[in-house]
Amino acid sequence: MILNKVAKCYGKQIGFFGNKTTQFIKPNQTIFLIGGTKRLFTTQQQQSPKKEEPKSEQQKKVEDKTEEKEKEKDEEENENEKEKENEDGEGQKKKSKFNVPPIVTSVTSTFFAGVLVASTFGYLTYNFKKDISEEERYRLNSVESKFYHSIAEPFREFFDNIFENLRTKYEFFDMLFGPGKIHKVLPPPLPGGKKYTLVIDIDALTEITKTSKYPTLYKRAGLDFFLDHLRKDYEIYLYFNGNIPQNKYEQLQFKIDTNGKYFTGLLYPETGIKERNQFSKKIEMLDRDPSKVIFIDAASPYDHPNVINIGKFKSNSKDKLLIELLPVLESFSRKNLDDVRPEISQFQNISKQSLTKNLEDYLSTHNINSRQKK
Image (cartoon, rainbow, N blue to C red; front, top):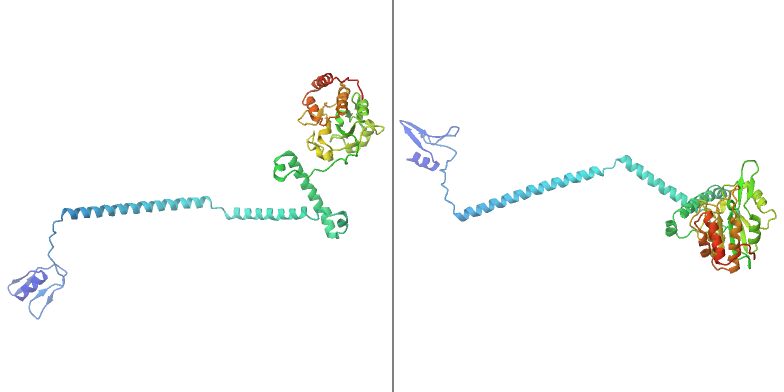
């Protein structure tokens, strides 16, 4: 009775075969004897499986919905993980692209540091005692004087020359930095002096040969006649271009103007009145009214409102351009023109033959006798 109750409590079946008690148990289970009797039981309980109750349709739907939601969450989590992995991969790629070697970084930093130091030194050198007077120069001590004359002043001239060349070549320099300081190459005009200014390139008046130690000079036809009549109304300046050695200037001037009565003065390449073999449009450097300045040039024709180009003189030619041009220039002063540039425009950008025809047409149109002298 007691064994059966115990067996029922533990869900086991115990049988009796003679004087032996038998329990149908699984192997590896511990068996205990109670009170010397042949009562046996195990440490594990085996519960009979519960019968699953049939689920209602609503429960099934709820479970299906929860399963779907869980699947969606799992899918979203997977997608988010993939996106993060992609972003991490792209970030690593970008980092690898912009991963600059330390040598390049050090060289770049050294370069910019050098530029900063050099620009600072250049600025201080350029402005060292820049606008001091002559008296202040004499008061400089030996170190300052040596630095001023040996380093600061040459550096200033070198930088100014480069900047002026860039300014003349590229107009946007004037837009960025404003018009440059124009140095005057002629003294101020005398009160009551001549109204018009004539600047003539020496190649338009003569041909100079270098076959011997001493240059031979050939004058253009009518040169003396031309200069002698214009000097009454024009201040005339002779321009020596860079093709002529500097030590020959006085010698050539003497051959053209033996008595020193034609030319008011001389102009040299260093004055900057010509840029790249063309007369500068910055006529203010002459310190004269631009509307009353005439350039006579020998270079190939170019656009300039004050230039009359008569071509380079060749000794084997027989042109008479100076004689044909003389009455036209005399008429400018006779008419007392306020601006000669509109008249000059009729003789620009043309060949020698066309210039001769234009001069003749101009004389006939204005009823000017080619032999008429003031």
